[in-house]
Image (tube, rainbow, N blue to C red; front, top):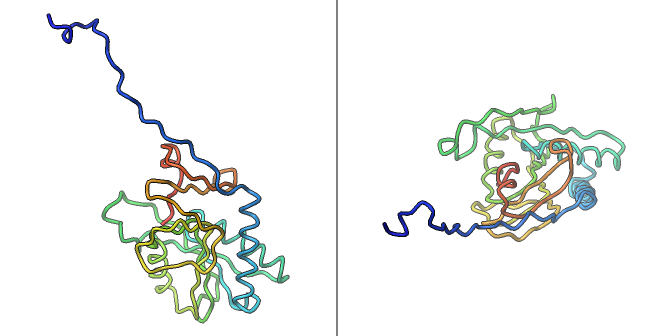
Length: 207
């Protein structure tokens, strides 16, 4: 009997690939300061927020839009409308991925015609999510202008889209994952960078 055929022959364990743990690139205070800065930039570029409507792209763009609206109200002393814009049926990868549950679109009663719509998302990556948002917006009305605010711009654009307001420019490799955590959804505020399996499973890779 060959040694390889014996059940008691020593077995070599295959080398295990270890992933570096995700590291925080934005802490809660840094997220707060980034949103405050974006709010002031919006006011500067839109004449004090006149005719501005904030629409968050689900999932995490929605609470970010509401936080921005709160900051704008604190500065201006008047509420600015904030809502959500579901892009599920406008994505260009519908036939490539499992069916998705429809999200919620909530637009102020006065609509978006002749308004300045600021789309809000957590991470800007390929630009395809924003392209889908522009298509969805076109079915709702005709805004005077559309701007984009993101918490993180990680680069690697596939479409000619850029953000007007950015909380943090974060150079990344395509092998890395950017995971945004928000208290409203995840119980804490953080932006994590890494390639750990738990980040891939639990975090949304912005596009």
